[in-house]
Length: 502
Image 1 (cartoon, rainbow, N blue to C red):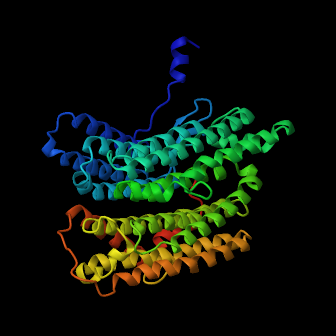
Image 2: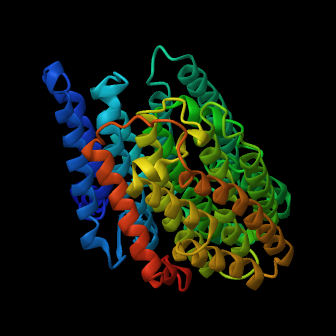
Image 3: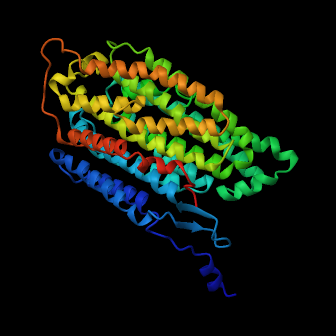
């Protein structure tokens, strides 16, 4: 074979359609960064519109991928082993991530101007983080997975601390950064152990080689599996890696808190699914019980802490949503743990629940952003009489809270909880199902308590200002999607059956 022929055999063809969603997002982010140098100060709003348009185009680029049958960056020696795979799982998670980023962008349009945030930096960081989050579900080797995780995480640190002269924002960013760096270091140690054991970074190849690990390397492999889970458990805010959540959500700009509550969760559980179900099925006896215990602890700690929030405490509404997101993360972890005891099909329940949670939680944060315009301290008590001043916003928030609680008319929330509960029962994790049932009851109290506040008679005259159009659009979009899903929950629940992987 000639040298030219050998070189040609090593050239990999790139499926540009498959990698379009994260690529478009990243390219638009770079365009925004460059454009910021030339756009006059009075026209910085154009950067936000450009970012929103870029995210919309990235969402449209998912349409050719809906069959879930594309892969690229494959080994020339084995085209079945690829670093990037756009299967059904990837497409659904990218839809969640990019849709959540688009709603975050809508909430951020007016917030960047009101809080005097540097627009160019803000939009570049948001687009960069979204690009990493969109890349992660398609990653099928540990190197790409770690890079995607860090690309999604590093810009988030800066976004949290974007309020440069706000003490709470600086403290939140520092706490978030230090906690995340520690978790990442532990995860990288685990990845190095896995590589030392298997000699490969591709997830499917790791799964094959872990089936036959030499006895002298078995302990190293188990340690690698356990340590690798730490970084992703941190992203899902699983206990005991959750301490950063409440202070980070309070200190961050409200749209950034919304972004972390949904996209951060998506990044975490997606990584967990890929490393456990795809790469480490042979060590289900290690990660299965660990994730089951993490799920029980996470939902319990999150719900009990949310229950203890005082309605008159500053930022209590944001803190309640923060602790609620920790509790919800516990529910999301249940089907992943169940997959260790039954089949990979249980993962569909996690995806179904995550889709419901993303829509209604972003909607709740959108209403919180609206209330914060007249009540900067964002206490639960500030929502008293919201129905009297803004009836549609109150009805929307009431609907979102009932969805999170799993009560009608939030049918999609009820069905999502039922699928998660069924996953635990079918896997023989009866004790975990009981813990979940108890936590659902606990959560009912604080969700219903907040909902009742919305419809009480207001105390004194309530200030009222014009609602920015982007915030209105975000609230309307999430409410419409939530209602539509409640009307036909099968659209989400179909992900709870059948395999999402190729």
